[in-house]
Length: 198
Image 1 (spheres, rainbow, N blue to C red):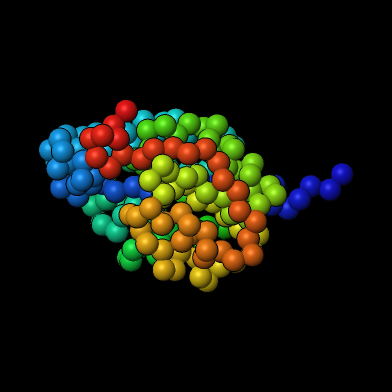
Image 2: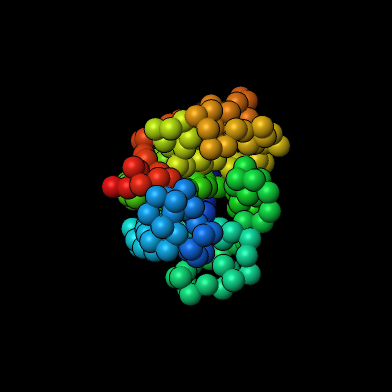
């Protein structure tokens, strides 16, 4: 029996994070509940998410927002690899993380989705078995996960022209991977305002 090369490569889960300082994270939520409580919520949410995501089936990499203090923050588990997100909009930063990953399946998620469980990540990686790209939609037209099989180079058009923070973000992102077989997994809610809190 021949084993497909992409299944012999390590899977990689990239978590986009930012140091949870008041006024620098979840500012829309902060306008509802205060900047300090919003930062506290994000810190606890991120720590809980990282504990839940640990799994021998994949490696976790923290993509830390471009900030020297963020890279050395004591908030992050010491045993997890960290990479700077770099500059640019969300698309620039996610594309950079995908390009810098070694060949093999890679998924990128945000840290502000309380409903993510290990089985959601496993489903996304499984979908990459016979698809090139996978998205995890959010109810607002965006998405909480994007993944690539990474058996070829990252498309140069990936995330170009995406209308971020809008109901068009998912549709726009799909349009930037022409010719890709695209899968979708579960719809999950991110937290932007107090109405989104579980």
